[in-house]
Image (tube, rainbow, N blue to C red):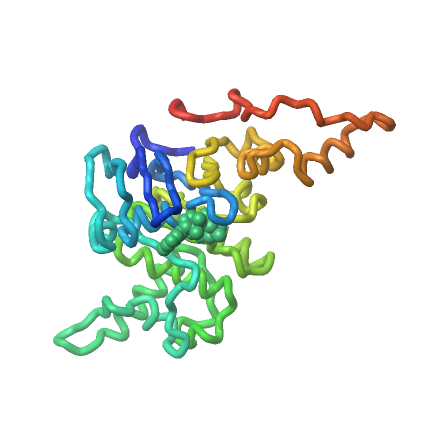
Amino acid sequence: MTAADSPVLALSGISKRFGAVQALTDVSLEVYPGEVVALVGDNGAGKSTLIKVIAGVGPADTGEIRWEDRPVNITKPADATGLGIATVYQDLALCDNLDVVANLFLGRELTRTRVLDEIGMEKRSRELLGSLSVRLPSVRVPVAGLSGGQRQSVAIARSLLGEPKVVLLDEPTAALGVAQTAEVLDLVERLRERGLGVILISHNLADVKAVADRVVVLRLGRNAGAFDPDQTSQEEIVQAITGALDNAVTRRRARSEAPPGDSAAGSSVDSSVDEDRELGGEG
Ligand SMILES: Nc1ncnc2c1ncn2[C@@H]1O[C@H](COP(=O)(O)OP(=O)(O)OP(=O)(O)O)[C@@H](O)[C@H]1O
Ligand SMILES: [Mg+2]
């Protein structure tokens, strides 16, 4: 990993309540330049709420956000984009009837003497997509005709036009097939190579293990561990997510590892998260 000495973005003590629901309690999260952080947790764990805090869509009630070592206020989306935080939401917000170039430059069209600079935008689109190794049939096809993975790639490429330093991706592979998922994960690696900090929400632990440098688990709106995916099994991450040692994943593993006839295998393990595997503050 080529991470820098200090995080580009660091949250601490973040809490947020929706009426009776305490969605986030004292949550910390940091991301370094050139680092992919996977944010995982069960439905309702607070992942999207945390992303919205960072994106300025739903500010926190309390807590501190630091950007490049300075405390900042993010109270509206423009604050986040102004700092250099880009967000790609799950619905992508692409215009199906427009072509790739028009989608990339939507709202920030290039003009020359008040006329749209179509040639300039097309050239910039090719350069951008080329630099990300995104392959499309043509930049002049309507995005309605692209695959799910290609559409996701266009949405991620668009987020880079503002030259962000941190990109937030909410479930970028949720609706994709195997090959398309691989394409998008490759693109996430390109973002890391560019030195961007990436926060990736995913339910797919195989994806997470494939690209993440660090896995941060939220459970019931609180931090529930930070793991090095190379040092941690999928079962251990599932444990942190569910808070239970006894689940279908661990039982299956215990069955396959137990000597024949040993029916108690796996049932008496300490239920605390393995301290050695926690990255915590030193990572
Ligand atoms: N606008 C809102 N009003 C009231 N409650 C909300 C609101 N947004 C989120 N919540 C609640 O906050 C908690 C966290 O929700 P959040 O959407 O952040 O979870 P999540 O981890 O993104 O889950 P999922 O994996 O299902 O997307 C949930 O209990 C949810 O019901
Ligand atoms: Mg969510």
